[in-house]
Length: 477
Image (cartoon, rainbow, N blue to C red; front, side):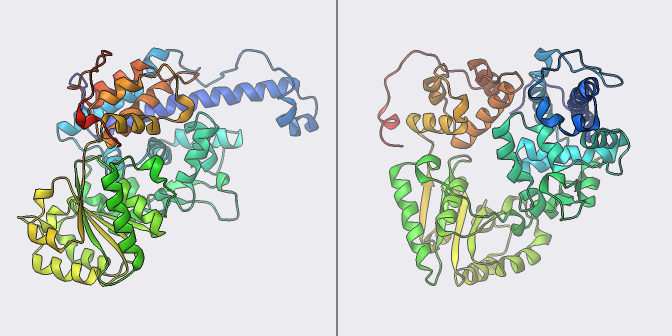
């Protein structure tokens, strides 16, 4: 949901100008800092040997003095304005979407559920395609001089500019590694040879993606190359802990254990299971959990993003999938009362799929949208309900990094908010982004309220007055 007072972007280029203004400010701060460090080095280094060993003596000698900005603009000091920049941009994006204005990069981010880091890496790689000034700034920051044959950002520069501390660096590095989603999806590619370290490699966008992101009127259908194919969502198995990651009722966990036992036997026909529940109640997370336990790759196909002309190729691709856990989201498009694909084509595919090893999971928001005849063909139906208050409190603590946990955080109040697990992740992520605008980072009640007002403006903040728990709120999550 968007802020009703936010002004929508006029078009895709209006949005890009706002994002590039942010990137320009970020680069100017980095340039100013580097110029200061170089000036300090010139002041203290008496020989070439001093320069070579500066990486350790600078940690011993205190270099005082005012930064020499030269042609670079000094860092912005208006922390009040910067503290809400991300929130303002996001509110304007939401307002644009409500008016039907397609913004290419936000649309791609939402479809692929890209993290802020992944989105900003794409923005950094796109910037030199718009203005060569960004390429010159990259060259200066990477090689300490204005003229360089490279006008593309390195992995190291992306991590240095977009990460505030070591923990963020460690979390972000896998997102830009050779086996990352950005590379596997064909969004970015390496512009330098493989005989360098990962940090030294230069990143550039695929030409087709650049064309899409810079379009005057972006056509989402042209982005199906990255969002419409089931192979593009292929993920490596991830280590997930049932106790820490799956916050579900005991009965639901027992059902998932049964599904795991069926899939592990690798008998024919392979299991076909239907997951039903509102968005954010844990269906996709449960699928990832099963894929991890089975040590199988996860393939996610969202039927809501597939158009009729793609069906022929899609069915061929589905028939040739390797052994995997296949998740078919929005299954009602094929198995509902008004299917978008002829059941005479769906039935043979399901029959063939069940002869293959692995596991097939169908998901839908509401159970009644899938016809009873299809439900009866499934090995089981698992319904995902809204989390209880106790489960919500655990989900909040999982969504917030442990180093930000503080005794002053309003855990009981947060648990009262009637949100799904996915909604809790969204609100927590925005609150953390707001907190990271200040140094040191400190998460406060105000950040949660700001985030809640952005994502759920119609939801009021719960009072601190204690109320007796209802029977539904009690029990094991």
